[in-house]
Image (cartoon, rainbow, N blue to C red; front, top):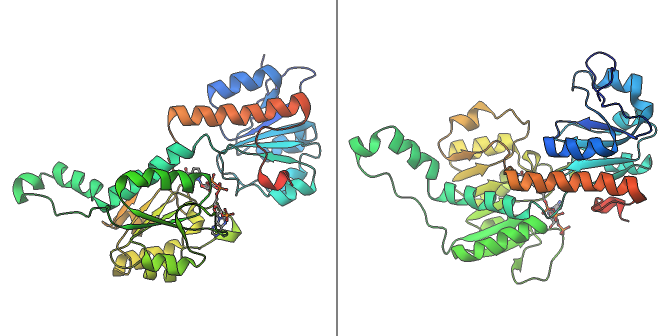
Length: 330
Ligand code: NAP
């Protein structure tokens, strides 16, 4: 049953049930499962502050779907908050240190999206190398008939692909790359001791790479990790693929490098100020652009939703979570 709440707010009222704040939009399947256990509160983004003033003290659980900023000030509006479940593996929009300081557990959805995001990285790499988007536009524009065959593209076989970030998804990308005949190398904070060459120095790896695939977490530590120096090292024939976070790449430096030919091409799923994409990027012919759809299939989003809900249900049952973020496991 739906009870009344201050204007513009919505809570499915169930007496004696813990109150769950939803930031973002739940799928129907998530909502159905959560409503069985919680009083689910779904204030709109505009009404959230007013809602928290009125009801924040009663909120014990929260779920984040999307990339809204959840900082310490936000958490302070919910003094009884115990857990934030993040729908997604990347949790750079949640201030985890602030959460830990307030005794709030943070969970995320690792592994269930590795394959899908790795597939997106591979698709972007191939699209950039093979001029996939430009060739399709060439056909649609009628140029095939009027001007003949489209220009030749590049083969990735024999190219060196440098993966920046070699965790769950980075290693899934490396595995998938084996069938394309690339020489795969990687950079991370530490040597994984696996069967790929490790570069402690990112510039050095960019110099030997034809393709860079970025798949680190976002946040201050990786902000502008891919800067003008790295783009210059990758070079005028180089392909930059970013499926990590927009903040990992210096977007203004990227636009300059693509405009002046310092960098060959870029294929991007993520941007610094989503959903805004700079006009300069949209105007460029040597870029392939996706609207942050790395994990966005029905099947993978369902698996992510199931895990995000499982974390809340398990926490409600016994105070533990299935997949807490690493900082909360220490
Ligand atoms: P993960 O298993 O934690 O792997 C992260 C990797 O990044 C690790 O190898 C880590 O190095 C490396 N790294 C962290 N900070 C670094 C730094 N400052 N310099 C160099 N390397 C650094 O994470 P994952 O599950 O693979 O996910 C990675 C990220 O992908 C997520 O955090 C998210 O931002 C992004 N993502 C994007 C989409 C999308 O839709 N486009 C979807 C899912 C995930 P060490 O191993 O040495 O610590």
